[in-house]
Length: 165
Image (tube, rainbow, N blue to C red; front, side, top):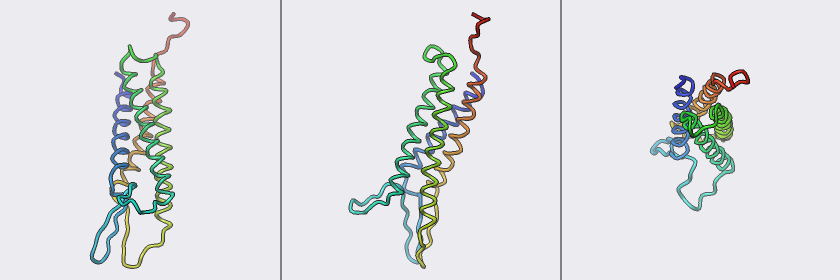
């Protein structure tokens, strides 16, 4: 198997895993006060809490990124099995899907970051981003790597030409 395809599969799998973990965990933001500490994520736990619009946007684009990443990894896996893939098309579809996942997670992270930074802080409470938030940014980088490596695998794929037929 080609090194670009293997590395793209590895980066795509890591990107998919990290975006799933970031989406489902509750450590996006941590607030510490004089006598308490609290953390929250994208999914509120109480039913009567009104969820802000930017949270819904972040949830939606994170879910889209996970779906695009799943399609990208699936096509890379299928491209490794010659009987199940169209010649040379698996890495190309995987490239488009990986870049779509990267764009979706970029929109989600940019919206969340900009809205959290624009909120006014409380005087005795310190808030800061936590590991789930940073894992979302890591998944963006991994999806970009997966897209670039899939494109490299697509460009290196031997295609049937007129002379070889």
